[in-house]
Length: 183
Image (cartoon, rainbow, N blue to C red; front, top):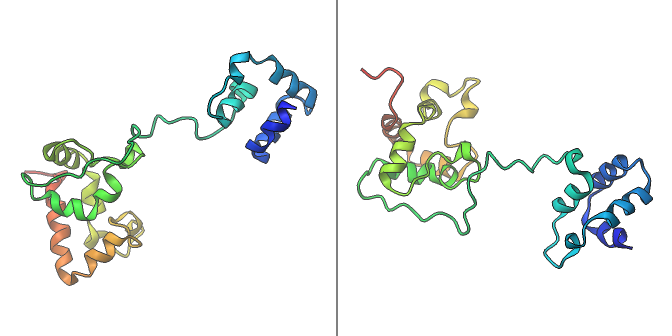
């Protein structure tokens, strides 16, 4: 009966993994469910992953369990950055913060920081930004897809509506990030 109640919470792929692990024998699955400690069934929010872990242990092949590459959870977003001390951050705020400040993926969250100085230091430490903003060099090449902001973004649309002056904005943003050959 327990298995039938839990059944509504699992995908077909989950069932395939469970059945395969227990030799395609439902009695073995039920036996495992019965062998779990009583505390497993204590009243609490249901967690599909917890049940899958209990049933499959090390055999669980679930790709989203590793959260090491994610930023710490942020309950209601990060506070906006009041830009007063470093005006060069304004263009980054308009064109980049939406994706690169408060992003749950660590590798994309490189404009994070509690203060303007912290954010500016993080931007300066990410030398790849210079290439991502090198539109003149990479437009029309195989690296064009790496240019920022992405062509399908609101930021790109807003930036290019400025006409030719958007190039000045891009240059100003690039100038914030040290180049490989600073003399």
